[in-house]
Length: 299
Image 1: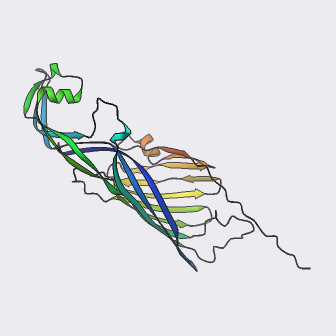
Image 2: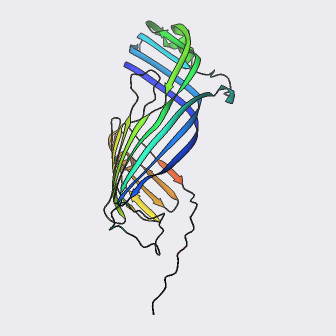
């Protein structure tokens, strides 16, 4: 194995959100928003090996390995985790949406909800998400020299105990600054008719993959045609990523309930699955009461 690197990071967020309309002129509409986040770092674990080779002799039940493996964990796995161990940090989200609203796409205020109806024919969105860091202080990193031949008959059940029993370990202590999985999100959406839409979404991870403590998102490009109405929606995303390659999914919304999968059809009909996703949710709306003024009839 070359450049083996894995990071697990669990954190919480408290956010202060501000958004507003920036431009509403003629057929052009622009809005933006920002979320300032106070981060609460919880569990942070990281392991890596630049080069790791090995072979197993089944007759002698011996494992021969070469290389080095190191890992760190910011808390004692044998003790209960408490809120006193949370580590503070800071982050933010930032985004903008532009909509093209031609005058021909007018609506009747007396028959339709001015807040709820779609007014755009084309829109573009851009967002920077999960920009921030958390610094864990005085974290112990353990490095094992794996140049050894080990009798597997005496292997312990615990992974860490296996390493301690059979390999030489060196412990060092220091700070670990981890970056949230910062990503750039791009979106374009076009309305062909009142109910038929198609959107293109691109997610790009901005953190260098060579960073030891960096979190990364999956780079993914999606094309999603959909039918959308006030009560019911159906959509069929086509996704391409550097992990699962090409995948096909489906989803629907019925009132406040929505569910779907970005890999539904590709997971069902593929013999080899590299990626599977599923989601569902329930949205509880707070309706806005509208008042329609009665029209006067001329005699």
